[in-house]
Length: 324
Image 1 (tube, rainbow, N blue to C red):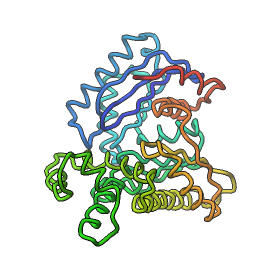
Image 2: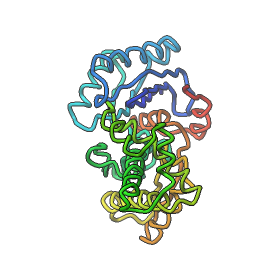
Image 3: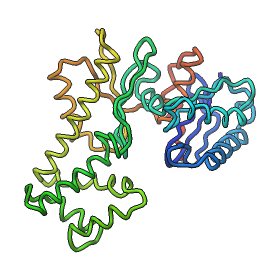
């Protein structure tokens, strides 16, 4: 059974045609397909490029696709799903079943390989998402940086700026973050940050990268930065806790929590905080990292949705192909 898995986001979109054993027949990468950041005309062109590349690489596999699972950021609304489904319907072989879903499914199955569980995504944005044994799903957070992106790089970067200005006003303790971020922007004074942030076309893209200076400051023993990490870690843990209570209320077995996103490149800082919280709450949760890329998770989702079973070699075989 040939399955096309698609992982679509705000900067890039990846596609893989594979089978139940993880054998890969075609791979491709194009640009953004998130409706919240790109217009429909450009999204359609990106999908046209993706499908054209896949077909050119392996016409037989493409023409005999059984299922297409597209986990795309920004398709939480039914009308948004229908828009993407209509675009793919014009490009896909007529017999292929097309499933459009949130990209959180890709991330979840990249760690659970098709099994129920929870995924905590902490990149530029954040979201807690899960699927239980009955196929029910829920999400917590991820409502965008202007409303709620707890546990994201953006939130941590914003907290760093807040700490800098509290120190500047003498409302809070001095912090190494001031020097680090002033040097980052090559400015003379923290107050120069105001014009930089407020004049930015996309402030989130300016603020989120500052999170790396928080972890650097922690390594240098900065107490303010340590507190920011503790706060972020505990908010992440609370989101996981709330989702677990809603999605697995009668659970008696261990549930996997997949940790995904750039913030967890410093798992040494965040995981102990999250684990401590979860242990003190007596929750049967196991923190895991992804086994495969999210686009591989999309393939796994397509196979599961089609009623198939992942072969024993699925993980190893699909990991042999890295989409650049």
